Length: 202
Image 1: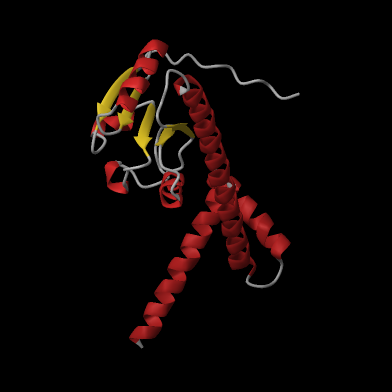
Image 2: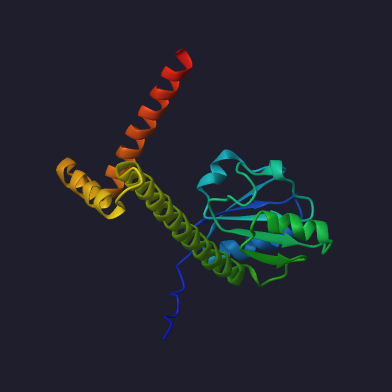
């Protein structure tokens, strides 16, 4: 049975609204203030302090990459796209920034709270998934390093014996097998590089 996520308390959080002066900004600000968030309006670009924001609302209709102090898709907080135009190019641009939720303009007297919750959950899920992918890539890289170290130790003969030797070296050096493998690979590549330099000097 899946566990229902707990609704977070958003009181005191900071939200930046990146949108030209407009009634949309006023409607969002009213709802954010009622929920208990501190709101900062800005245009045409985000200030550096926005990096510490809890949420950013941005105009998908007139927005451009240079408005953000990060690369597209690398926002360090949940993003909410404010969409008025459904032109494919504008939607595609908003998607390139990995908006976690959206609000359709004109914004009325409701919708901001649910957008905040959806954006927060989507952002956390994406961040968790990115962490898992990074960990898996690290494990794959470590396994490749172990294979390279075993290959260097075995010199094409007995891989099982070479792996046992690698484990023995790790124990004697009091480090992990992965660290021992990295050390062996670095030593092997260093020797190979020196040999190549020696050959070039002949």
